[in-house]
Length: 204
Image (cartoon, rainbow, N blue to C red):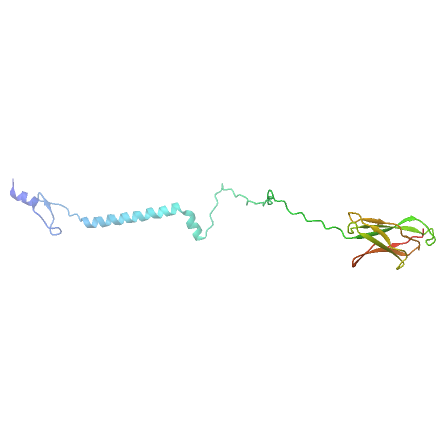
């Protein structure tokens, strides 16, 4: 074996100082550091491109809303009508009975009418008739005195009656005979005077 050739093969050489020879043939110098930098840059650019593509594909609607552009409807999309809500009335609470307002009893009332014809020494026919008086709304079992007025004056003793348990009564023992006179009756109930309707007395 040639010692010079063996020595040439295994002779150490400093990096960057001289080329390496194998069997007296120079070996091309490979710059390892520069190649790694280029590969790293290519990988970084590729990663950025993939990340941008993922953002565009995953969230296309978000970018559209941020830019203010309305989302386009596809030709096959269907617009639904707005829903309407009807409020049903509140159901009554079981077991609870609403209060019933108490009916206000009607106040005392007097109504008079021309009754049957009659006559006496002081009441001339044919214009003499009884005065039919009906009373309602008075205190139950109350004693009532009905005073009749004709032409602005009382012309008879009061008609006295007693109300029943419902506050109703009738009184018909007063008569009158002046044609064309305005006739009415009243009852004094404490400090309150209850007045009836007014009649124009007939001639017959």
